[in-house]
Image (cartoon, rainbow, N blue to C red; front, side, top):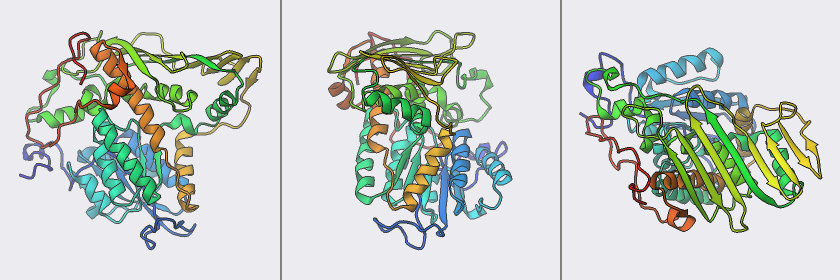
Length: 438
């Protein structure tokens, strides 16, 4: 049996379609132009979108792509599970029937489905699979000359990020658009406050405190809930958020949004080093991710950034940012009176229009392609992901981790080869003081 195809004993439970998925590659290009580097797609050119990864976020991203431009159609979809693909397509067809033009031949299921989407004649690809697959899918998308929308984060380990960095450089050379799912960068109010901060409204930044306190994303089922005949790979993919090789842990997959805002405040200059604490307090059966972290980043000018995150039920929840400067404090999602504000010598509160940041990501992506001036979020999306991985490594090992150590890491979390029937051992839960630096 083809290692890319689901096991035959699963056929009674679900029908697997044709190929694979696990990421949504976002790339847009006028098909008749076949993407000449510096050309713009005219307003009348139909841009074909392919979706890789048909979960909730991938389906949402496809919906937003179709709303971003009246001459955009969805023509190819992929996922490792046919039920996910079917549910996604049904939802999209109900909402946008005239723009969903996916034939039976362009529905792909399997571990190689992403490549089949890229080969299907699309112009834009949305990558929305678990982030462990992002480097492979992003590299393939750039090689295929596609514009890309890729969800955060960009990888789950440093070798993966090095691959993404190389692909970013190639995308720049080819003049391809790359927009990342760090959605707060596309939020009008947050753009306004960071612009104020970067122009001196709070003076020099001395400290940042970011919180991401929330509930569990997708708790791991107990082993007795595993259906008979389910392979190791399917079980882990079905519960991908609970395995570090697939999600990167909660700090990297979810709280990376707050890490990204720290990076944004510091103009995307990376920290010198980090120390962290973390662990697993609520049992999670076979899963190997932590449920809380606290990371301390140190910068060259003695500025410190503190990131706290927790994913536990019944606890205090907050997603906020405090940016402390020599002339005042910038606050995000702290006051009930204002979403963003500055308190100090230059009091200020945002009074401009609101926006759906998820929609704005796609609006600006497609507008940049139409104009022949493609956006490229590549450098900062790598820096923010690296900072989150840095915090995870510091917490897992209990060691101080420098940026140089981070960049030289050779710890590979993602298996080089995957097939449906492989034995896939679960990495032991990290233990600070015992887990080595990779």
